[in-house]
Image 1 (cartoon, helix red, strand yellow):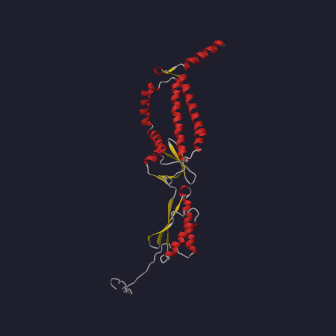
Image 2: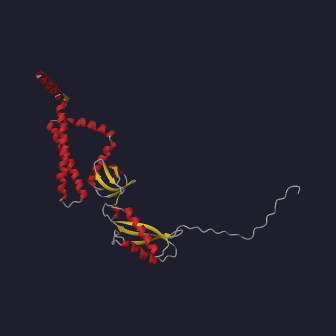
Image 3: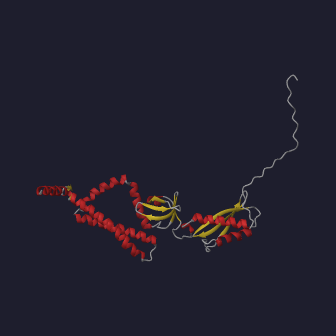
Length: 298
């Protein structure tokens, strides 16, 4: 029994001491230790970032979006330092792996171009902050609020509570509309039409009342009514109202304004016209009688 145990120990020892890269002194044992150390570094980074860094940043006067970015950057620095220390503890010389790492990097560069592009774009987003957590953005056909920014992708949640995962490279290469970049105030333009012959002075007062009565419409800057032009069946106007609802419920705010406009016009007897066509038939006089055709030989 003792001989069997010793044989198992010797076999395990030979396996652990098997050189994977003799030139760099990498064995199976050192590789296993390195994997364990990497796992401890990742777990430690999450604990430090969630329970210490985030709590400290919340006590500062920094914006929540900047707190998130700073916590992520600190977490990445912890990971880089932890991985470096792990290599040193195992005894792997990083300088001896430079050539191998360069060759592997070139190979991965061709096969993982999109991932690397998104990774670099994520670093640019975290550094320059063209978008931040809580911003309302529009990119392509995706419109919603930024919920999370990672190194590879950004999560945008729509008003229907649908999470859209957008690659970070799209935010760098495509045109992005950030409604919350500098000032959350946005001017909404609501178009409508009224019948010809409407008292325009009265209409202006009523529309300003509509804007003033809505609780989410801002008093400053003041709302305005613009005369757009003469339509086929109506006088076209736009009610311009400032609000901060673009970050929350823009479609609901616009719908509420339209309902309020319709109600106000109906209460004061102002017609909202619909397209109409008038058809007239004209004749130049009585039609000349037409002779009946004659049969041959008649």
